[in-house]
Image (tube, rainbow, N blue to C red; front, side, top):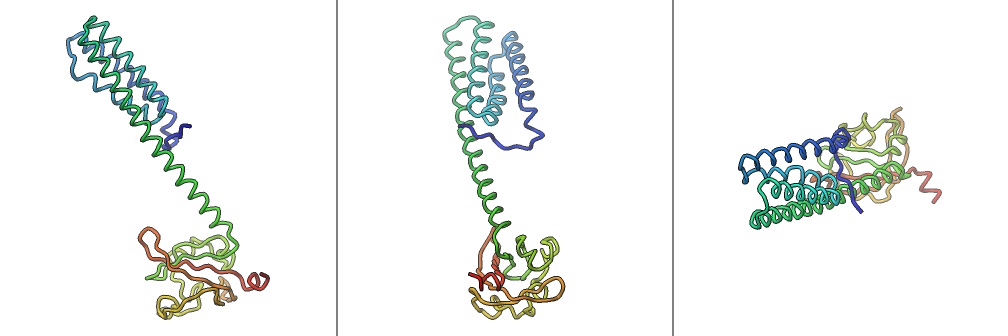
Length: 235
């Protein structure tokens, strides 16, 4: 099963037109060169549309390469005449067209599969992040600036994520003073411990909190997971 290569939507509709123009130009250049005795440079022009077709259309791109090869072979035979050496050389070139298209198609398929796998992973993560029934906050382990929060934490605090990103968690959503972080400053381990969270209206409420150090993209972060105290009591 073929996997399409992802590109900006604005480019995709122009693919057939690009290949059609390049194909016509290559054929016309071939005719001109063969009628003027040039037999060296122009065959390399075929690789441009062939590689693009194989990258964009994979299996169908290989078929395109075969068709272009037959056109090349036919034009060489037509304009130069039947000569065993020329025919063999042209046929070898046709085989090269198909082989290169095949290699590009395989690589394109692998790239597309990796993109699809990344998209599936992102979708799974986003689904969990947005629907987990617990507040989650990512905090920079060094600066204590908030890096991200999930929708549940937004509801807990009354703040939108865009209002929290980049702000220090101290005296904002966490009652601890700067320099008194239980994790990074006091070396404490918070594992299902009862803590307080500050809200937009200045009030605080208890949560069951777990904190774990993680590294994402080379950046040291603290991932803080918070469940409401009531939810803990009901389990």
